[in-house]
Image 1 (cartoon, rainbow, N blue to C red):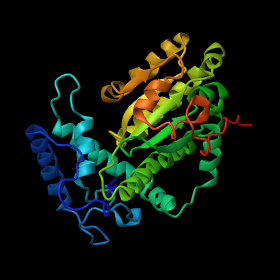
Image 2 (image 1 turned 180 degrees about the vertical axis):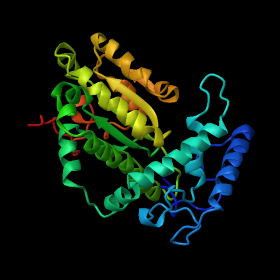
Image 3 (image 1 turned 60 degrees about the vertical axis):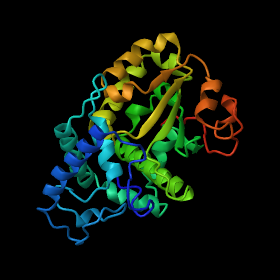
Image 4 (image 1 turned 120 degrees about the horizontal axis):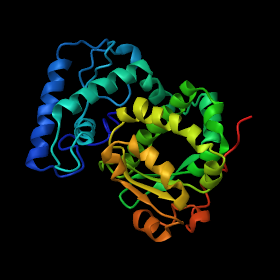
Length: 307
């Protein structure tokens, strides 16, 4: 949240040219939010949007100043994908709920820890059990993530870690997206970077289907989407799932059912490794060697199995 505060200059902060309707709805959302903000007093006395803030300085509601980049993400999250109509009321409710969630789960402590390169031991353990890496930047300077999702499905790891620990691990994962986007924007002299590109390797998913382990992962994924991800809307620009066998279609349809329609629209499925499509989205130097790229420097180990 507010990941570009102190990085980009004053003025238009959305990164996209908004049409008149979008700009008007964004203004309505800001007006409604600021009317609430005016009624509270932050302990810090800071009335400006900031990337880092101590969660102890926030009121119980978690309400805090937010920038236009953040507001726009919440506005777009509730745009009807068929009619392109905005729902300012839904976006406002989503934002208020997200701020309360951040306070409850101490998300700003996560931000502070990441800035200080502090990672809890439990999060480190979870990263070995659900492997993902930030491989570099795409052609638009957006962070690129690769994940061994098929191995996670087949490992049985989902049920060997407490749900609360998976949630904290996922918070560190999502907040790292913001950190990477912030770093990229700095390198690009204040260019607005507000989304990532995500690739998931489904190699190994067949064994999870045959052993039925995949159905034990679905409750975890559903919880992460419903309890966490809804508070981090519009973070991903492209979602590419590859090495997806035809037999996995039933499982995919189950997962797709609880995804937000806006998210579902961004998903691309490939039976093998779509190297040509990958190269359209990211430089070859970002793609791991095992997928046909030239990136040999990333930390992208095989998934471990929890004991």
